[in-house]
Image 1 (cartoon, rainbow, N blue to C red):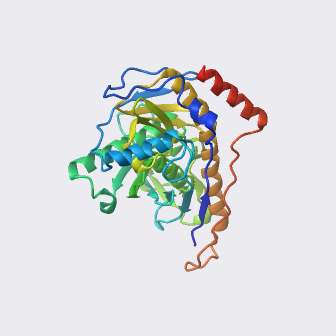
Image 2 (image 1 turned 120 degrees about the vertical axis):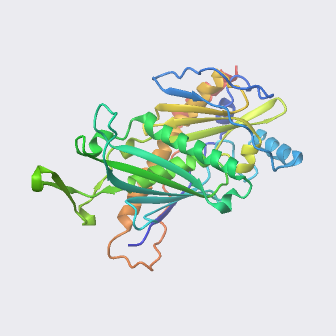
Image 3 (image 1 turned 45 degrees about the vertical axis):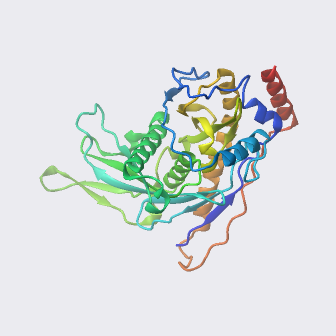
Length: 382
């Protein structure tokens, strides 16, 4: 069975008014102060996690950082994108033959490259839980090639941090119905193992990991089981190996995606950008990661870096991130479904599939919506 590779240019939202609105009514202070406290998320009971990460030693010179920062302020980034533009992404499914589901995602030309494999296993449920339900376990690792600049201690800390962030995004949404993963109550349940391998890091790593994980879970299937009573009354489980009888993992389409915005500052001026490259991340003073459901609702939030957040800026970020989350969720869903449709049992393994055309993404519903956004931006500037 051949794999289908799909490429899609993502939303181009680099309008000047939108970029200004993302900065809010004022700039966030960055001069060595640590962000603290709790931000109130309006419109729902979203969990908010504020964390500060230790900035790594910069590999860029002062002149390079000045060049990147001034480009962001001019709404022309080093790779030609506007502040709120996203790099094209490529998704390939079925890349790990013996896994229940897998996906590889590349983000950009100098790509952030992530490989995810999902494996199901039958286990005995935890005895201290009040109800029988399945579980999801994540593990994130770097390849040696993309971690040459990190020592063993820093690499382990990065792996632990990314694993915890991925687990948080999956758990906070409550989208996966873990009780549906029960095989025999209080005896056998499905354990969903998610293994993430970072092949290369060109920036915006967490967003890429979450997108690749959702794509892998969307391609994951569960084999049907037959439970019979064996000798002595003990249940016996028989697994149906027919791949055409497998069913999709429930609830995956409702999983949120992570949308990260980073603030690049030059002196006292600063602007928020989407999908930061690794160089831009070194120039960022603060970042905000939002977990957004397919409907654009906020499921969780985490903050990193050494800077403070302006509440007006937070409102503007949410106004622009929510539609982006909806569009990205649709793109992932459509591309994985397209991959399933193109990959057939009759395909020869050596045949290279033709890439599907990019999925068109609307940047605005209509002119009225565009005018409304401009009014909101003008109001925030006032």
